[in-house]
Length: 365
Image (cartoon, rainbow, N blue to C red; front, top):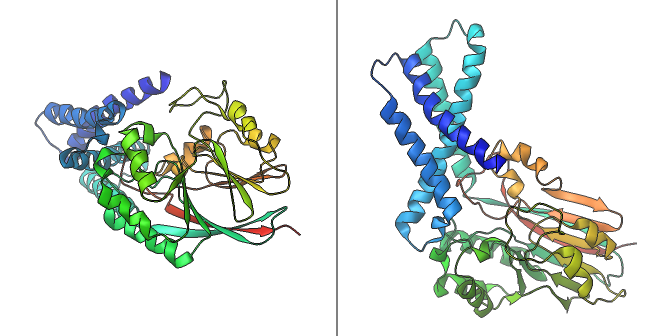
C-alpha cells in the first residue's frame, strides 16, 4: 500500500511540476493546467492498464497504446527528475539560459528513451560455464526466461531467438516462465515456430502465464512440442531437471505476484530425486535459493527480475531481489539469474540488456 501511495504521489507531482517548470524556463504566459491534467491522465491510464490487466487483451489498439504510453511515462519521469536536479543546481548554471536548459532536457530525455527503445529490439547471448558433480559429460542448456510474447514480442523477434538457438545447438532449451504475457500472442502460427527447434524443449510457468487465457497458452505451448514441467522431475542427458510452477519462496517472504498458495519450501521436498545424478532446478523467480541449497540442488536457474530493465530500476532492484542478475553461490548450490529475453512495461532497456544464457555444465574435477 505504501508503494502505491508513493507512486501516486510521484505521478501527481510529476504531472504538475514538469509543465510548470517548462513554462517558467520557456517564458510561457498561458496556463498549463490543461497540459498538467492531460499528462496525469496519460500516466494514470497507463498504470491502470497494467494494474487492471488491460494490456493482455488481444487488441492491436490496446497493444499500441500500452507501448506508446509506457515510453511516454519514462520520458515524463526522466524529464521530471532532470528538472528537479536543474532546480537544485540552478545557482551553478547562471551562464546557461533558461531556454537552453529546457531544450537540453527535452533532447536528453528523448535521446535516453530512444536509445532504450532501440536497445530493447536486440538480445545478447551470454555464455556461462558451471562445474557440476556426478556429471558424466558436458551438457549445454539455452536458458530463456521472460520472452514475453505479446504486444512487444511477436513473430520477427521469436524467429531471431530460434535462429540463435539453432546456431548454438544446445542439448536442451529451457523457457523458464513468462514465455507469453498477452492474449494477442496466442496464435497457433506463432507457436508453430517452436517446432523448428531441434533440441529438447522444456517450459515452467511464470507469473504472467496466469494473467491471460492460461489454458489456451499452455495448450499452445504443449502443442508446439515443448514439455511443460508442473513441479516435477525429468531425467535427461544425465541430469535430473526439476521444473517448478511459479510460487513464492515460503509463507513469510513478500511476493507482489501471488498466483497460488504454493511455496518452494514446502513443494521442493516432495519431488523425489537421486543422489547419483546432478540436479538442476528451474524456477521463474530467484527466490528460495536457501531451500534449493538445503535440498542438495546443484544449479538453480531463474529470471523474473529483468535486472531492473530500465534505469533507475536497474540500480534499485536489489532492494527487492538481492540476487537479481548474474551468478551467486550458497554452499554447493549455484544460482544463475537471467536478465530476461524480452521486456515488460516500457519497451526499453537502459542499464540492462535482453539476454539468452547459453550454459555449459561440465563435470567437476
